[in-house]
Length: 274
Image (cartoon, rainbow, N blue to C red; front, side, top):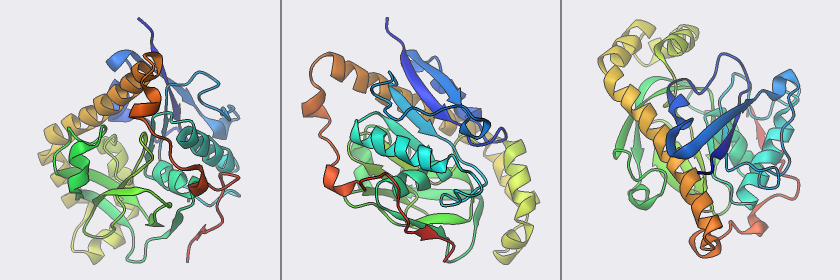
């Protein structure tokens, strides 16, 4: 049986697939991690180079900080090509912001401050029929850790989830590319580091790192199951898309994201701290 190659872009060693590592081995998927910050090259055309799925993880840098992370333009090009070539794609946190930028959206600092802790994300009604989201509950409890947000979705994007603070928590581009702002993959140790760095922000909303970790611990079974569900759902999308392509039903099942919506270069300047 053919295996399905999933490219995982890891921006920093501390932010990994973690609890979503179950993608590898499910639905005949095999994960291969690329670290562009360590000089490892990214494909310009995932379909031509034999990738069946692309997943871009989070990172501490902002989506527009090319001076801090000079590989970000190449990641945006990769994401643009993934959308255009209809390769199943998932961007998590920074990955979602890069996906939005690559397709013409706008990313900036969140106007009401960082969103950190274990918080609820409410899926839209349209998520019930979405191939990636349909198995998830209508309200997801998930770790969060971000200061930047997608403030304007790309043209033609479908909004699929929101939180109490920021509306664009989940979106889809075309038939097979998703961005999620929250972190289903994050384990306790990583979240604890983020929380300590945002003690003041948590205090402003009446919380503390200790309280958020208590919420995490009480909900750990559900959080672990949610991470596994996200992993299996994306692996199934990768498998089903590959099967549709092999069986000749690709065009009918996966209409393309309109090329007119995509910036010519896959790079957008409408991003920044303002």
